[in-house]
Image (cartoon, rainbow, N blue to C red):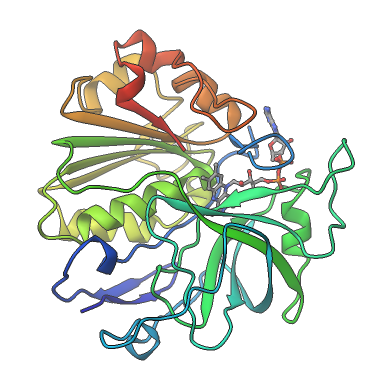
Length: 329
Ligand SMILES: Cc1cc2nc3c(=O)[nH]c(=O)nc-3n(C[C@H](O)[C@H](O)[C@H](O)COP(=O)(O)OP(=O)(O)OC[C@H]3O[C@@H](n4cnc5c(N)ncnc54)[C@H](O)[C@@H]3O)c2cc1C
């Protein structure tokens, strides 16, 4: 059985049927805002990785129980996918829906990502090589016929102006799925997520995987930092999670400066705040971090230029977390 979701900025509706195992769970990803202030992410390596929109996935588009779907992508090379549809999400982010051939699927299970580059290699870095960036789709692994991304535009960014300039019919080169790790339900009693801006995408993928599995009792806390309230992507999704899984999931939003009508946290996350809300550093917990470089640096230290986890530093290190208790997306 599979979850069917209808995804809009204001409303995210879904029905979730009984689920078999991990492979039959669905996730969305999201990506978003924050960070005009900061920008950039922990790429897989430097230039080579480091208004709302309806995104419905009809049940008929989902993997049929009796049929093994074809996987459209490969991690061995780039596949050029054609842009089917673009929908504005908010002031700087849009949802990009790319065609998958026939009724194939992306096959992108949590915790996984794809790497994107310009289909014609027209976007190059200072070293003359094609710029590549990692993205986590908001569509689920089993969605047939398309893969969808929510991508924030950085006006001074190297890659996202290109993506936001694409029109239906244009192509993007996509490689994946690249699975960072396989989530095993109930490995930890509690997990914490410290996310910023469009770094929300990989976190959302994993959070939804946990919450959609009734057998997974992992308690989840999300601390989500953005520049302004308008930058918070997929807030409606997390609010809905909180409503439906109040005993298992909690989310705290934070913005950088006070804003009219804002009742949530204001300011960067510091040790005192994290100590109050994150699971304590012990063998029953794990904390996941994803966000722009300055945030990563402050919270956990960044990843290495080749995408390795790198040394744990920052606030989490000061709080006593060990390297195996933190994962940097
Ligand atoms: C696992 C993963 C999944 C992701 N998924 C998504 C997703 O679904 N959607 C999405 O929108 N994004 C996602 N991202 C981020 C994405 O990979 C890109 O980083 C982002 O799109 C910006 O790319 P760009 O080339 O346009 O900007 P860049 O050229 O990388 O720059 C972005 C901004 O950061 C600034 N900047 C760059 N480096 C630094 C630095 N060291 N210090 C301070 N400022 C800096 C730039 O001036 C600019 O304002 C994900 C990242 C990861 C690691």
